[in-house]
Amino acid sequence: MSAAEYLPGAPGRLLIIADHASNAVPADLVLGVSATDLQKHIAWDIGTAALARGLSAALNAPAILAIASRLVADCNRAPEDNGAIPSASDGIPVPSNVSLSAEERLTRLAAWHEPYHAAIAEALDRLKPQLLVSIHSFTPSLASRPEETRPWQVALLYNRDDRAARIAIRVLADDGFTVGDNEPYSGAVYGYTTDRHAEARGLSYLTFEIRQDLLADEGAIAAWTQRLGRVIGIVESELLEVIA
Image 1 (cartoon, rainbow, N blue to C red):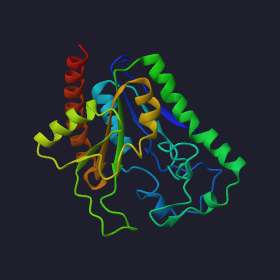
Image 2: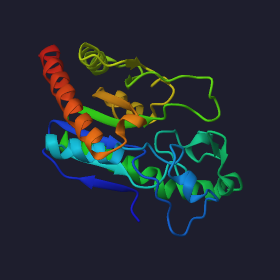
Image 3: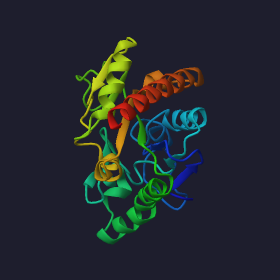
């Protein structure tokens, strides 16, 4: 089982990535999490694999998808962050992760975290895209914090570089969507992948977060594929004008 799936596409324009595209657990690893819980948002970003694949095909853009559950290794957390191998998520414990030794932790990250990032770095060096597009989804509500509401249909996350995000936020708001501006959490906190591969290179990026109940079936995913494809095209066009 490889750490990343690569979808080919035209170089020089976009690279699409999905940090939490899969809820798969390697056959030789027992997390102690039920099959039912592995279908929940704690294990993956529901709908993002299909959405990333759809965008890759529609835009003829290469894509890289992480293919192990975020409970195995969370590729959008720094390796030294405890959350890179979470002991619990949204109140659900991950028993095998609690008892990992330091050596076992490093071995897990070397197998599932670093190869994914190495694949992104290699693709960026080889394909030289002008825009990195990161696809995520978020749960409408957390079981551990039921008092919090998440009304946003779609959100854009960013850290220091908000050039692309500002354009996308405007376009989606003009289209009538309730858009989160660094909501329901901040890209400055939860943006390891884009910090490492985009901000560090001065590469513009978009981190989309779609509410998971809006990616519930093939029709919904197809609609978001078309919608985000249009938004990405506008961002590309306006960014090129700024750069020029």
